[in-house]
Length: 171
Image (cartoon, rainbow, N blue to C red):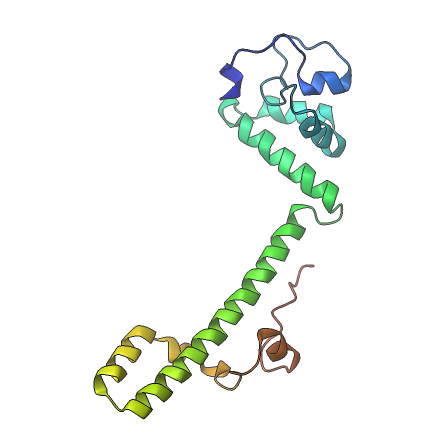
């Protein structure tokens, strides 16, 4: 942990920004090194130095580095997106994940169709057994997607064949 590293004689980034003398027991020094001035500047702009020091005092010492990293991440996200902050990034990732899951389901449905078409044309019982074992419960799970093999997920959503997964309810 940084708090046990020997400190250099220079002030920490927090004390430099606040234009004050950095004491040996400075609460900011182990977490806001002098070579990372932007890190504290962002945290200070969003949360304020006083609030950050209060948070650090209340948090057990073994959790302070994680706390500072969380504050820095939230400050960065809040500066990029002042309204939603981290929640906006999370919602964007969730929306993308839903779209990718939908695309994966479409691809699996297409694969199931092609596997059954191939096994029907070959008529080999070994192929049938293999394709059903490989797909498992999938043909049952993809029921509503069987009509949309030639459509992308965007087209499926636009044609109202599926629920609209592109919208997250709380944004």
